[in-house]
Length: 207
Image 1: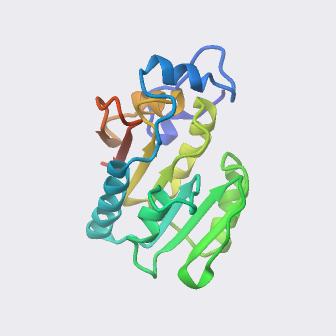
Image 2: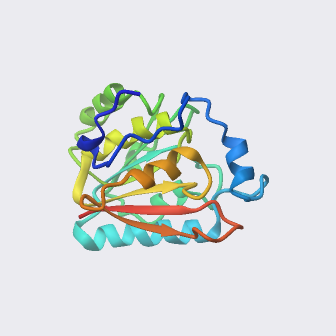
C-alpha cells in the first residue's frame, strides 16, 4: 500500500507482508490468546470511553466527534458511551456500512458508507459545517489497510484532540498501527493490554 506515513505521524507504513483487506482476523484472536466468543466492548471499555470524552471536554472542548463503526443497539457500546456523555451541542458524526437512524435534533448525524473512502466522507463532514474533530473513535474493519485509510481522518483532529481505537490487543490493524506511531507526534495510552479477558482499547493524543 502506497502511504505517506510521515504525513500522518507514523514512523513507517505498517505491513504484514502479503497484505490485503482480508487479514486473518480469527487467527490473530487465537494467537493473542483471547476468547473467541468474548463480548468485545466491555464495561471497562465503556468507562474509559466516557472518561475520555470528559477529558477532551476539559482539555479544550468536545465540539465534534467522528466515530467509525456505529452501534446503537446495545447500551454498552462506544456509541452509547459517547452520545450519553457529550454535550448536546457537540456534533456526533458516525460512519458505518450498516444502516442507522439519524437524529438531527440531538446532533446525531450518520453516513452509511465505506469509512475507507476518505474523499466521500470528508465531503460529507464539510457539508455539515465541521472543521475539526475533538474525538475520533476507530472501530471498523480491523485489517491493516483499512485502519490506515481511517487513520487519515487524524488530519481533522484538533490540537487538544484524542483518537481512540478499539481491539488494540487483538486485531492486526490497530496492533500494527500503534507500533508505528511516532512518539514525537503522538502520546499513546494503552488500556487493558495484559488483560486476557479484554480485547483492549487505546487513546492516542496529540503532543
